[in-house]
Every structure is written in C-alpha cells, then in structure tokens.
Picture 1: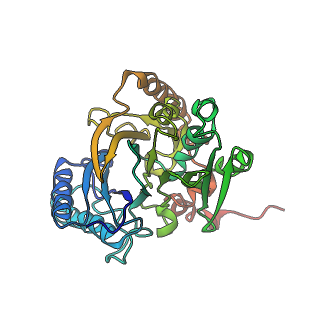
Picture 2 (picture 1 turned 60 degrees about the horizontal axis):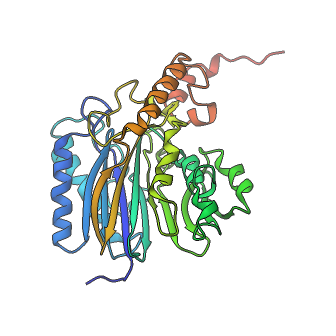
Picture 3 (picture 1 turned 90 degrees about the horizontal axis):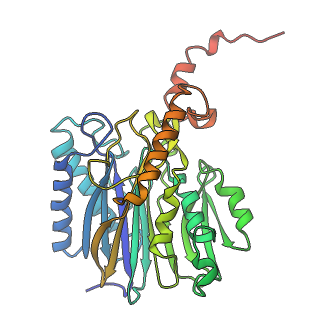
Amino acid sequence: MSSSNKTTVSVIKADIGSLAGHHRVHPKQIEAANESLEKGKIDGIINDFYVSHVGDDLELIMTHYKGEDNSDIHKLAWDTFIEITEKVSKKLKLYGAGQDLLTDSFSGNVKGMGPGVAEIEFEERKSDPIVIFMADKTSPGCWNLPLYKIFADPFNTAGLIIDPGLHEGFKFDVLDVMEGKSVSLKCPEESYDLLALIGDPNRYIISKIERNDGMPAASASTTRLSLIAGKYVGKDDPVCIVRAQHGLPAVGEVIEPFTFPHIVPGWMRGSHNGPLMPVSEDFSQNKCTRFDGPPRVVALGFQVSNGRLVGPSDMFADPGFDHARMKANEIADFLRLHGPFIPHRLGSEEMEYTTLPLVMDKLKERFKTMD
C-alpha cells in the first residue's frame, strides 16, 4: 500500500564509469541497473522505473508514494550504483569507475554523497505529462536560463499571457551554493530580482518552482561535486523534472528554450565554456566525444498514470532541433579556437576547483614583489 495519495518522481544520477574515457555509459551498466530496479519494484520499494543515460552518466528515473528525500528510495539508488561499480565498471576497467560516489557508506540520503538528485511530489491530475531533462559535461546552473524562459518569459511561454491558469505566475526557489542559503522569489513581480541572482549560474541555482498557488511545477538537482570534495572530481551533470499542461506550461513551451544552445560551464576537464546541445537518447547522438563534449542535454517525456510511467518519448529526436544542434557546433567551433584563453576557459574563480591550482603551485615561489 502507498504511504501517501501523492506520487513522487525521483531522478537520481551518477557517473560510475565510462567506456573509452568520459564519453558514454556501457550497455552492461544499463542492464545491471534495470535488474536492480526491477528487484526494487518487486520488493515494493518503488512503483515503476526507467533507466536512461546521457554521456557517461547513468540515470535512474523512479516513481513511488514515499515522498521526497526518502531513505529507502535513496538507498536503492545508492546500492544500485555501488553494485554496478563493483560488478560491472571495475570488472571492465571502465574509466572513472565510481567517480561520483564520494563516500564508502550510505548515510540515509544520497544528497551530499556525490549523485545528483531531482524529486517532485504531487497529486496526480486527470492527465499529468512530465519532461525529464538530463545533462552531461556541465553544472546545475545550466537549467537557470531555460527554467526562467519556461516559467517567466512570455516570449517563450505564450500561456503566461493567454492561459488563466498560468497568469498569476510562479515562485522560484534559488539556492546560493557558496553560502548554503536559499531564497524564494515570485514572478512576475520579482523577476528582476530573480534575474539578478540566476544570471550567475555558478553560484545561484534554481532548485524548485511552483505555481504561486502552491502547485509543484519543477525540481532540479543542485549538487556541486567540487564544493563537496574540495577539488575537481568530475562535472556535476545535473537533472531536472518539469511538469506540463493543465495550468502549467505546455510540453512544447517546456522544450522550446533548448532551441537556443546557450553557453554553460563544463566540457573538457570541467574547465571550459561550451554550448548546451539538445540530443536524442540514442547512442548515435548521446555521447560526448568532441573534446569530451560539447555539453549536451536529453529530454524524455512521460505520462504519469497512477504512480506509473507511460513512455518515454524522446523529445529531442526531432528535426525541429537540427538547427539547434548545428548552431551548437558553430558555437563550439568558435569557442574552441580560443584554446586556453577566456572565454573558452573558465574564469579564475571556477578554475580554483579544477586541477589548474596544482600547476600554479609550481610557480608561486617565482613571483616577485614589484617595487
């Protein structure tokens, strides 16, 4: 029996090893994840699941009635990642085996332990479409611009103007990852304040969105691996869940922002800016090979029906996004020509969490004070 009349969608991801460098998961990892979550379903821990992937990240999409931050759900995901790391990734000597697992033991919640988490709990409507976004070779701030466009920009979302269900706007929860504090801002009335924060996606990250009457609308992961580990251990590769239709933005409005491949931090060694390219879930597009990138995003559409997942539909497997992919390649060409220079390389503050400080340490004694 369910412990709640609300359905929860949990998306938990981790990079636990990649085939040939950092560019894609191995099919045996997907197979093992399906076996583990099927057992979790039989045992009644979860109601339904779907295993996906983007680049070198394994994505566990689960539905249940246990609410957000539930230890049983998080332990199932953690045990799945650990088992695959030991039985598949290390056995096959996959690169970076278990790199997102920053501790040896489970402490009740995977937040702060390495894996990325997005969860949203809601009462199911007559029809409940969701879109799950999964990104590789970038950080959680990559969702700031598209989430703003989806829920606050009428030039993207016509429903903000013509749909009475959206007309009162949305509340954005924004996390300051440097201070560990959060603030809630309502749009449209506080949209300028919101933009003042989220325009710096390295520090301020949208974590939750709800309609101003309290309806849950979106949830995004906020894990910054470098801030947890104190050094570069791989990029964060975030996930995001967005509900759609019936008083929320339409599915077409939800995916429209990704026709613009905006520039995000990450790419090679987590040290470069690059365009976020929308790609299919299929391995033909969903692998990061060029300079370990460029950063990319997969979108899967589901119907949530009585706690189960119907789908998915591969939203970016559409010629309507071909131009965005072409534009992303053009932007990648332009940025790559900068080589080690800013704006291709990240600024000094972000580079503090890469391996560059180890290089700079060799030179610090050679700097002399100028008269």
